[in-house]
Every structure is written in C-alpha cells, then in structure tokens.
Figure (cartoon, rainbow, N blue to C red):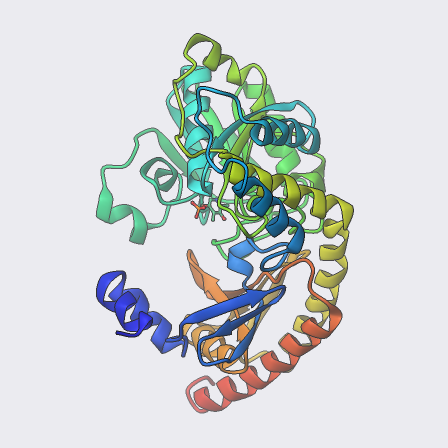
Length: 412
Ligand SMILES: *Cc1c(COP(=O)(O)O)cnc(C)c1O
C-alpha cells in the first residue's frame, strides 16, 4: 500500500482528509536547505519550516556532521554517568539566554519544556495557579494543554489540570488583575505563533515583567517558536530586553535534525533538585545525540548571525506581502509579524485554505495556525535567499489570483 494510504489507514484519517483537501496527498522523499521533494519528484520551497523548527533549513551540514560524529561515539547517555555534550549545551544555553538564566532542564519537545516549567513553578513557589493568555499555544500534553485555551483541544479530555486562569493576550492590566496570593507563574509567548502570529503591543513584555516581579510571581517566556533568531533577535524577549524567570525553547534548538526541548531558569528555582534530585526527569531528555545537534545549531546561528539575517529577509518578505495585501484587499485582511515569523490574515478561513492549496500546487509549502485558521503562516528557514523570497511571492500572487477567481461572486 502507498504510504499516504497507510497514513490514512493506520495513523490519522481526519488529517489525511485535510491534506488531500489542500492537494498535499503526497509523500515526502528528501530535503535540503529550503527545498523538499516529494516521491513524484516535485520540488517545494519550504516556507513553513516545521512551524519555526527549520531555522537552519533541512540537513544543515554542520548539524548533520555533529550528529554523525556523536552517533559513532555514544548516542544515548547511561544516565548514571554524566554526558559531556549535554553538560556543554547547558553551559552554552546559560551563556546565550537572558541575564540570570543559568540552569537547564532537558526534555524532548516543546510540550515537555512547558511541563517542566509548569512543574518547577509550582514546586518552587508552593502555589497552584498559573495564568495563560487567550490564543496562547503551549503544547498538547495534559499540563501544557491546560495552558492552551482552545476548546477543540481541551474539551474532549476534561478535566484539565486545575488552577489555570486565562487572560486576553497583550493586556497587562488584565493580567495584573488576575494575580492572587495563590499565583505561581504567568506563561506568555513573546509573539503568539499558533494563535495567528499575534505581536503584542509595544511594552507588553516589559509590563508583564514589572508586574510579575512586583507581585512575586514567576514569568515564563515560552520561546519554543520565537527562539533562536526567528523574530530577528536571538530571543523574542530581547525585543524588550526582558529577562524572564524561566524560558522554554525547543523547535529550532535541535537544528532541524534532532528533537529537543529545554526549560532554562534562575538558579533559585532549580534548588528544588537539591532537595529532591529526581522530582522531575526524562529518560531521553538532553541525550547526547540531541545535545550535539543543539550545540552545532547554536554555533551556526551565532556564527552566521541568523537573527540579523531573519530581520533583513523578513523585511523583504514583509514588503512583498504588504504589496500583495494592497492588491488583494478582498482576500487579505492583514499582514503581520516580525523577522521571519510572518502571518497573512485572510478575510475568512476557507479563502486562506484555498490559497494554501494553490500555493502548494505552485510548489510553496505553508499552513494555517492551529489556533487560528484564518491566518496563514510563513516561517521559512533563516538561511533563505532573496531569490527564494521572490519565488514565493510570485507563487503567492498566482495563488491569490486563482483564489480570487474561485471565490468570484461569493465574496462581495
Ligand atoms: C510548538 C509549540 C509548543 C509545543 O511544542 P511541541 O514540540 O509540539 O510539543 C509549545 N509552545 C509553543 C510556543 C509552540 O509554538
């Protein structure tokens, strides 16, 4: 049976249906840099970048090389001895994250990074409540899902972890009002990714930092998607020069080659491990293979100054998108984002979905936000070249023309 049919039969029939609808009932074959090929030989520009994972593109040679070297040496840690790549990565993360973040918990995904931050916040403060934001996305394991206020994901599995409060994103005053004597932490994305590339008002993160500090509440910055240069700065919080108490990173941290997730925090918070060294742990978290990938990924990100590149290329892409938004006001409502974390808000989710399908047909991969289907996300690798951006914009223009034609007479 062909792999797509197997996927539909044994993995996820609903998702298979959605993929078929967007014309992506295809099987991937191989990838390099900004390109992916399917098994029919069709080539795609990857402007989705695994939702902010592929900052270095597919199979960056330095990451692949580091992983191969570690693979031939020792891919897994025995855990009762200390792993050198893991220890070196912890040192590096302490160096490159904002001031005061010195200690690292290792997991294997964004959700696990968030779970760790959630648990550490409760253990350290001895308080149960965590405040999250509307439209926020923090993962789908039960703890992380409890911080992801979306009925479609939460309702089928209730009861959730208790003690979570939801406030509007970008509204520091609402957040301040929600804090009680039982609040352990606030979790916030510097820019909401799955929520539809929502950039908060200027000064929001600084206000959240001021309020949480004054009220003795921990600030958790979820940088799983915004981290490692995506927004044009190394971290999303760098835009407002804010140092949170805990910072989560995952997606791009593994260099697009290995899965890894971390919660980096202040030393006092990690004192909980002095009292109880195994209060939280993971068999695979920070394994040498993933750590080697992350060390190489960080090195490439800094050496090639990928945050600056994201800023420059992001500006070019943004200008092109704004020109298209002016030409297609009947389809596009807004263009927003920062660096190479950009979103196109369509007038309606069906228009966006058709445009995604038309783009795929023209060899450009994108997708809509999980929490906001009206918004199509563009998160190409940070190594993208000007010619790729022009190719994508040209394909988008064609896709918009086709979409307008399909909806003619339906949209006023
Ligand atoms: C993707 C994402 C997560 C979850 O990461 P997974 O690796 O899919 O578990 C958490 N937070 C943010 C901000 C994300 O974008």
